[in-house]
Length: 73
Image: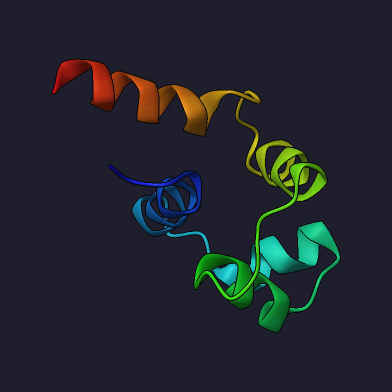
């Protein structure tokens, strides 16, 4: 099962959104964003909310994708 962070990474890749763009929108360093995505640190709730806002998706967008996949298995 994919994690929320993996779903966000997939969304970025699918939509050709660069990590630099997202880190700028979040006002965090690209290094910090990389640490989040590479499981060096946990994704905080406020960061998750900021990511969904920056990407223009609903709060539960990545969570629902996980639920849908798990339900279909």
